[in-house]
Amino acid sequence: MASSSVRNLDFIDGTMNKYVYLDILKRNLKQSASNLGISRHFKFYQDNDPKHTAYICKKWILYHCPGVIKTTAQSPDINPIEHVWDYLQQKINEHNISNKQELRKHLIEEWAKISGSFCTKLIKSMSNQLREVIKCKGGPTRY
Image (cartoon, rainbow, N blue to C red; front, side):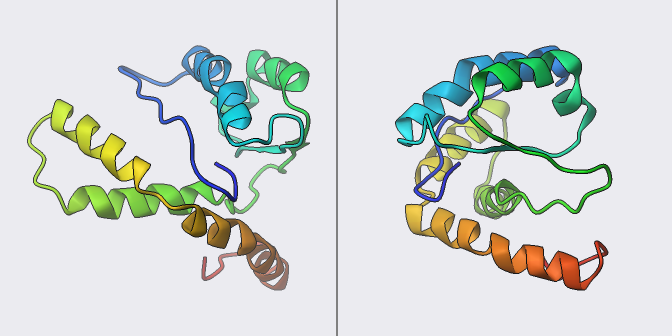
């Protein structure tokens, strides 16, 4: 995601591991950045999940991302995409979904409806979130 919008939504079958995650990065990251118009100027942000910090993933990111925002171990999760996932979950809960195909269909539909103004609001809130994290000395925040 960027402040302008979200891009590729990828689906996996099975368990996510470092190889699946790397494949998602390879298929989507550069394409999404290009579609968002930020391919040369974006900073990649992710948490410290073991899949994300696996050597093969870190190495690929090193060579394919113009910038990376580093997070320390046990850092507060302030990634704005978390708010997007919450919003998407709320929207999905409004549907009466009975199978995987319906879920996928509604996820794609709701994902496409996520507005640029919503993304902008989330990105702009990051400075407030960082101030709150500092104020709470890394402890729980209202975010």
